[in-house]
Image (cartoon, rainbow, N blue to C red):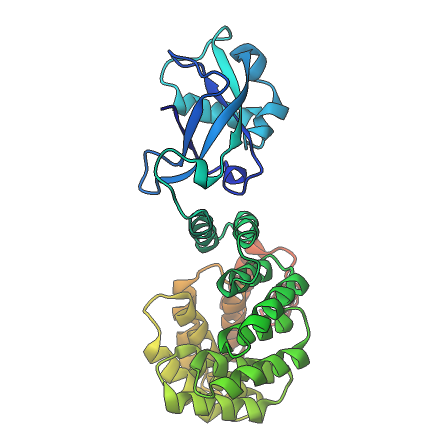
Length: 378
């Protein structure tokens, strides 16, 4: 019972676009007609049977001919021969010699009804692989798996929605919206898919259509906190700030534990020139942030800006220092600190800050201009 294990570079094996593999010849070499039991990552916790197959052809090749063959390496799932050899050195303990024989094994995947061993749900297996790739940020690979899974059922709402999410992350918003539309034809009362479509419209630069999609989600469930958050965000983009503020306040009546909501409220209150109220919102957001988190740094920076508006420069400086302590190379935080130091008459210290920014980003025009301004006061 010959067993083949395929690793992470072999995504095409999962989606049915690969029908060959290259292996060092075994003690009992494979021959045409042999049945193969194929697994994904056989010796890891991700072990999963993927299919059974029948060998259709065998070609022999010496390692010396194989090691520089980019075409065969790409067929095996690698970027080039160099990457393939790097993996071979890990796979084969003994040093490979030019005369070592490898088999190029061609096979035909068998229908699950013709398997002799354990049968699996192929759609579920491919979907699981797609979800793992999606969660690890490998969107170019996961979208291929979602496409393969959809061949089993083109109306699967979960798969259509996940494929849409995947395409959105790849910046292919029009295709993503088409996926959501197909899913909504099957399940028109799914508020989450309507909201995902709204996000795709927003990211594609069409906030008006985003709001229309969000309208559908709100009608289905007006207390869904995720939908409400995105509604507020879309209204902000449309510069309908008072309406956005109303939506965020509705959200707070349902759940007041999300620091992003408090920060969004603070931003709106800042924009409509209510710095005292903005400061209270930022303070609440900071209470809810995890210590030393990127969100905490941004919240500290926002709070510092609100304090600047109130002329409370020493407190603002403390906020910017704490934000920089979390994210030391953030040029926005550093720039804000430099501006406050200028307001406090500390031009030498401010000039040092702008010099630091220019070391990180030599083309930062704001830092260049402000550094020059500081030098005039020395």
